Length: 99
Image (cartoon, rainbow, N blue to C red; front, top):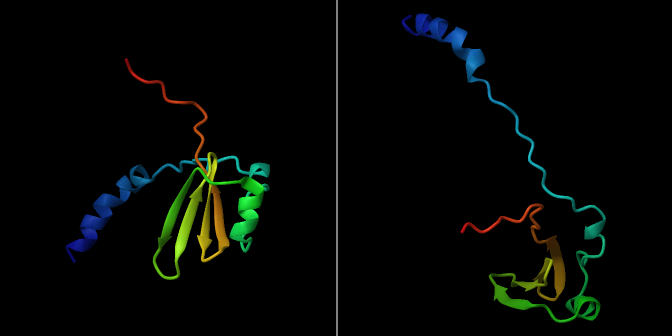
């Protein structure tokens, strides 16, 4: 029975506890994603279309997942086929170095 008076005392404070919804844009990846390697595409096809990667990461885990990093995107492979391609984050306003 002591719980009910405590809840009634807190009831007027409930509107103060409401949060604000923040909207954070994920990025503008519309048409720029269209040219990236597609799921199921072969490693050879990616190599022919985009050339050698800037960095190739060795396979990890089972099934083996490897990654090729290009300047503006990365390609993830399972065995010899693409499982995902992602654009790298490009800040809209570069951070200025503090002096």
